[in-house]
Amino acid sequence: MSPFKWFLSFLIIWLFIYSMNKSGHIFPDLIQFYLSDLLAIPIAGTLGLWFMRWVLNQRNFVLSPMQVLSMVLLFSCSFEMIFPFFMDRYTGDPIDIGLYFIGGLFFLRVMNK
Image 1 (cartoon, rainbow, N blue to C red):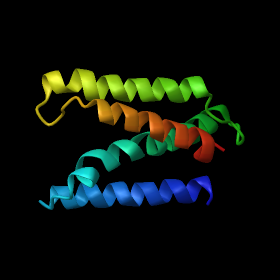
Image 2 (cartoon, rainbow, N blue to C red; image 1 turned 30 degrees about the vertical axis):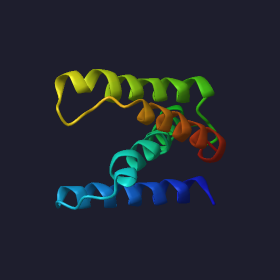
Image 3 (spheres, rainbow, N blue to C red; image 1 turned 45 degrees about the horizontal axis):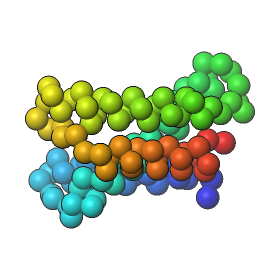
Image 4 (tube, one colour; image 1 turned 60 degrees about the horizontal axis):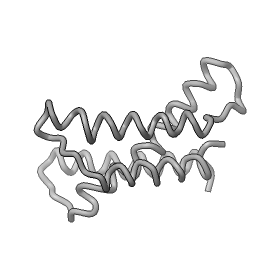
C-alpha cells in the first residue's frame, strides 16, 4: 500500500474515533486509549514530511531517523510527562510512549518515502 493510502486510512480511523468520542461513544479500552497514540506519529510524520518537501521544494525529501526520533520524544514528553501536570484530560502512561515508538518505526520503514 502506498504511503498516502496508509496516511489516509490512519487519518480516517483517527477522525472516526475522535468524532465518536465527541458524540459520547465509548470504545473498548484498547481502541479508546491506545489506537490514537499508535497512529499519532505516522499522521504527524506524514504532515511534517509534506511540509518539509514544500518548504525545501524537494519532492524526494525524507525525514531522517533522528528527526522521527525527535518527534517521538516530543510527543512522549509533551503528552505523557508535561500535559498531565496541567490538564486533567491527559494521563501519563508508559504504554503510550511505547506506542509512539512503534508508530515512529512504522512511519520510518513504510511511510517515509
